[in-house]
Length: 131
Length: 313
Ligand code: B12
Ligand SMILES: Nc1nc2c(ncn2[C@@H]2O[C@H](COP(=O)(O)OP(=O)(O)OP(=O)(O)O)[C@@H](O)[C@H]2O)c(=O)[nH]1
Ligand SMILES: [Mg+2]
View 1 (tube, rainbow over the protein chains, first blue to last red):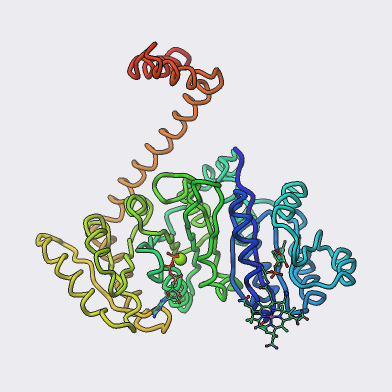
View 2 (spheres, rainbow over the protein chains, first blue to last red; view 1 turned 90 degrees about the vertical axis):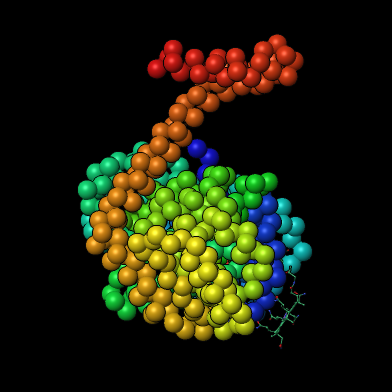
């Protein structure tokens, strides 16, 4: 049976900008995915716990506050510590071009900045699933 | 670690994966339920239902915290509707339960209804069994109370908690018919707002109409967001449990529920068996066309499909 792709959309840290995360959540739902939205102000630990219990295929992180260089790798590392290697991790938000190579190297597989059409996100997820 | 050790240790990732596997009818997960079925039954299942936005998730969060004080392990299955158009869903109940995520004695899983008519995911029953096997003492199932799901939740839950709010207006009339019979405990949530007493009176008056009840559902005013009277509500839920246990009704209800579940499982399998064959040969499409063109009639067409499995068991 073809089960829907499950995605955790999470906002780590104290960042209160949630419009982008909600836009992404809605467009993934409209593309037929099950989106678990955990709301604002999540610690990396909470995000990892939710990802594991929900057994998601994708962890999608949104940050506009500038804390991405710290928080994105933190989530990736905690997932690795839990032995998770079959979840696709992506990120987005207001992130300077210059920071993206570091984030990719840290294990975030793609970073989407303002203006990216949501259909690109949908396509990227479908093409890069790890299950 | 092998699977048995993981179950014994309550390894959450294994638990989560088994639920996923069961959602797709995976045989390995089914075998695990089969081989551990004898150890199930320890979990007590509380169904939480009520109109959208009544505070079901917030209340579940608070009730779980109350039970954690008694050193219980809590499983939560939160169900939200799947969009019939895209097949996708936004599952947002976790927003109200985030600080439970990290508790080692709590497991929360969100599910979409995935087109099951009953408002409850087909896999919900299986997920409760997995949580039961993993040693969770209480399992909450949150489902939006719209029509059929209320009937569905009775089939899975031992105690049904109906969450109402003040000023539902005509809604209380609309849902009254179905809910009076299925609710074991009423919570009037958002009692910090005006109108809670009026709603309580309305519910009590409806209960008065049923005179010959051995057990009368209590109606408890609470405020989930202000964390008020959650302990009283929990006491009432546990009192219902005790009533069911003392009167042996718990067992009778579970027999009834298992019968319904068994029927549903057989129905699903039969359906897919029939449809697999009918769809494979485009028979379904062909018959539908023939009915429209009046080359056959619906009854004869139905018999054609039924004969398919009668003749090829
Ligand atoms: C609207 C807005 C606000 C609103 C937020 C309302 C809300 N509930 O979201 C309000 C007014 C509250 C606000 C407050 C603040 N803001 Co402001 N805000 C903005 C603004 C103008 C637009 C953001 C927005 O909503 N865009 C629309 C959405 C749809 O786009 P998006 O979030 O970028 O998402 C898209 C992509 O980035 C991507 N995406 C985003 N997340 C994800 C995740 C995944 C997984 C994927 C795949 C894609 C993806 O896809 C989306 C769709 O294309 C931006 C500037 C800007 N142009 O970005 C500043 C901005 C983000 N804010 C900023 C600041 C500094 C603040 C404040 C600290 C200001 C202050 N000094 O008080 C506060 C902090 C609030 C808080 N608690 O965090 C700065 C951040 C600077 C930085 N990163 O270093 C910005 C960049 C403005 C600036 N140039 O200085 N803000
Ligand atoms: N005033 C007041 N608001 C409450 C109370 N309990 C919950 N709320 C608010 O009601 C809103 C809905 O709460 P939820 O717990 O998400 O309700 P729900 O019934 O789970 O909602 P759905 O799952 O979407 O049907 C939130 O904004 C809560 O903060 C309460 O006791 N009093
Ligand atoms: Mg809810």
